[in-house]
Image (tube, rainbow, N blue to C red; front, top):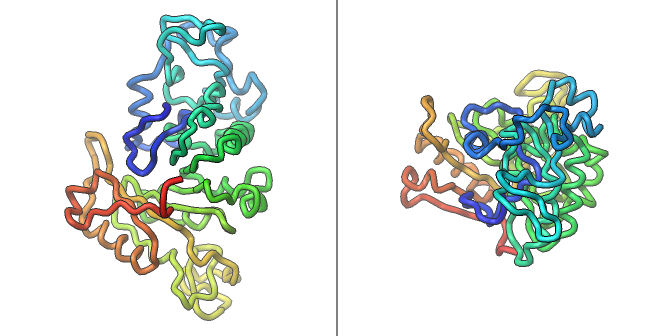
Length: 328
């Protein structure tokens, strides 16, 4: 959960929050948490002092109870067959996922980026969706405060719920100012065509944005959501672009959806990858799926980063482009 990672588009992962409730069948994070999760102390009754449920702490309140949720806060790490000795530190093996894949806030990990003096590209919450509906605003606020205390790094946030980027504490305004920093990148994950509208919910203004198409499970036509140079209007309902204004959208047919205010380049970077693991119904991508996206990205000058899972499929056309000119 710390410095080293096999994710090839970042230097490190940092997981102050772990666990997710999306329930994706292809999720690698869930497999890891189930393999290395649990703790001997979980056999204790749920009302013991060591088990800090979010609802009990008042951070989620009614929402935790509504979900019958297993959301937890750890101010100190769970130690397997060891003791916590403040004068000398933690002795024993730290259990990274004591609640398996239940959403868990590891507050004791917030200062990790400050300890990393050399600048890194950090994937924030690779073992969670920090912007999932079940995550309390307070957790997100504390993570951002920790980022601000270590500005030498570049932070990459990835979610399947990009609408929440602009819904927390008036962030639509704050993104354009306070959070639209050069060292912060905001991305969303898509795997199929019907999920592509998530791209339209990425933050506007000066924020850096990216799209993670991993695992790609079918052919995806992203050009529908990328404006041409002569586009002047965009439908707020379906994302269709138009050169001339009309009362009805030329794509979805709805009335009054066209707006002249839209981002000329919805994403600054695209990551492509195949499904990992050995799931029974694992989807193996076709070469034409990748070629189609790459061609469109080249037309719009969008850098493309292919994960190692595509090296064999792409051969000499394999590429790993980073949107920043050089690492911090």
